[in-house]
Length: 178
Image 1 (tube, rainbow, N blue to C red):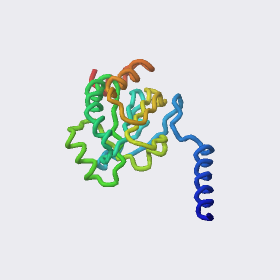
Image 2 (image 1 turned 45 degrees about the horizontal axis):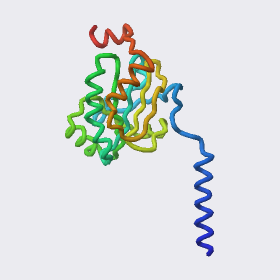
Image 3 (image 1 turned 135 degrees about the horizontal axis):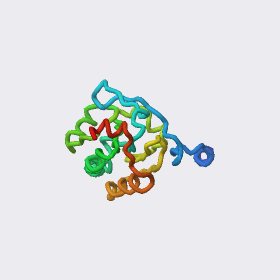
Image 4 (image 1 turned 30 degrees about the vertical axis):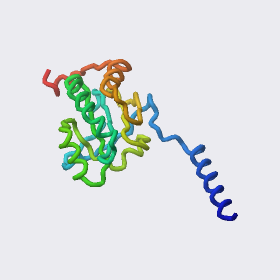
């Protein structure tokens, strides 16, 4: 009986913690937390702030996540469709073993930048995979989506085209060679 009471007390404590803890989901409409992280399998680093002037799609994934692998071709398609329009798609890999992540990248022929996202999912309130975050040209979070979507490419297009127009700044045009 004491064990049962202890279990119930523990469950109530966990419920209370879930109810009263601060929601960690990124605030849509607020500035995205900045980060500087290495590209997957490289010493080269990417600083999120350096992408100001471009829309950024962050896709948090792991090699063991089946739905993440299902989304990979759609993200590659979105990258190819929007990369010349001032949009950057970043794969935010969370694997502890580099080889696991590289296997997925190679298997699916992913060409969009892949970042080693150690410690970053928590900053964005990511608790499950896949998770997708769209950040506008000013560094403001516009969309947070957790879970698989079979219409991901179209959904990204709507999120990018509708909530904020893609405006190529002079800096973007120079980087794109336009």
